[in-house]
Image (cartoon, rainbow, N blue to C red; front, side, top):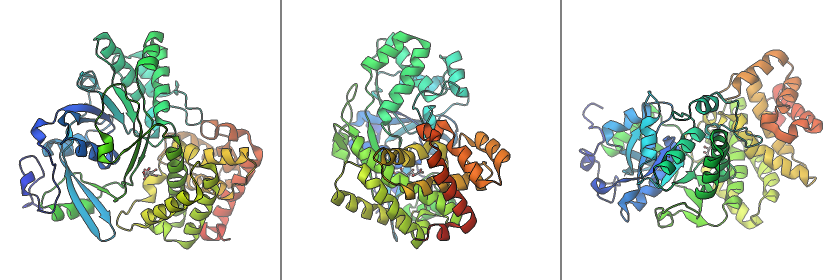
Length: 482
Ligand code: CS2
């Protein structure tokens, strides 16, 4: 690869002809957005919509922030923030260079530099993809987790915050003190009511500092709800080599995705915003029906495929969905979810067909291990909320219960040592209860932070325990046999 030049502003013109390039003068782009959590998802989603807005208004460039690691900055700084978006569909890959990222900030000495950017009056939106756990909340109640080590540290030293609630509260305090209007907080994470979720943790954090600050945030700051959707697997070295060959430019961190993309945004901003609709986003008054559909149908099935897939030895979502037992299971799961949604049957059937095709896209190689991460943060809104809804209406939920069982069996088989903020707790439970899988399942269901009110439901715990034992004894295919 030595003769392939590295992607940068200087080498951009040397990209192969069929590689799409920024359709605006990058020299005129100035920052208007700070984005917290600059990972692959953001770069394949929001940053692309923004890229499409920059020709009309170059004042919306993005300053990306990594909160934990320097690797994205180190990859993109030599590339002047440029990176390749590779859209894969079956045998074809289309490459496009995205230029909306002005800069990536990260400092191992803390977040002072980031706070300075967040307080710049030109910044009118702070958006986030920090994953479920970045909100430092209890997954079952949605309240700020005041026992969280990062939150405790930020409350003790609020001027040098490191958590998302701490950073946002401090930025609002500083802007207010300087007479600068607040920015809009735009959560792009996969959470129910993501706008209200972030508002709640920020306001609760602020209230623990100073009531007046909390009141200011509650009354002056907009936190629009959004629904985000695009499947974006982690980048591999094979992807890097393939993309360098395709574009003629070496990119240290290209991003791979599917053709599909959807962004539904509540049209309620504190200040101005780019014309996202012109870039294909849907600006609506109520995001909730879209968000519930996406979380329960797409993400619910994704998590189920991830846990069953891991148990059955399927490396990717397309392998798992190609397993007839799992495809049948997903159809049964969707049958249970659909009556809990606001959309009509026809619309939902079309949605299921589209999801099936997306899951089967073999070119994505979306690993089940990646989706299996952070189950304690994902299972509540992806599976348990639907179960609670169906129980409330006296409806059965066999498939949903089995999916929860698959998560617990997956955690149990790993002895609790999974990639999850609650891994220590799960490891303790596993050590005290296993090899009694039924007992482990009952103990897991008692975890209020995950199961909320369902933690008290003995009949539910019994049903989950039965599903886990079946999976453990018979294996996935036999346990799911009709
Ligand atoms: C996935 C999501 O990793 C996961 O948990 O379910 O990232 C999923 O790919 C996106 O929500 C699709 O929009």
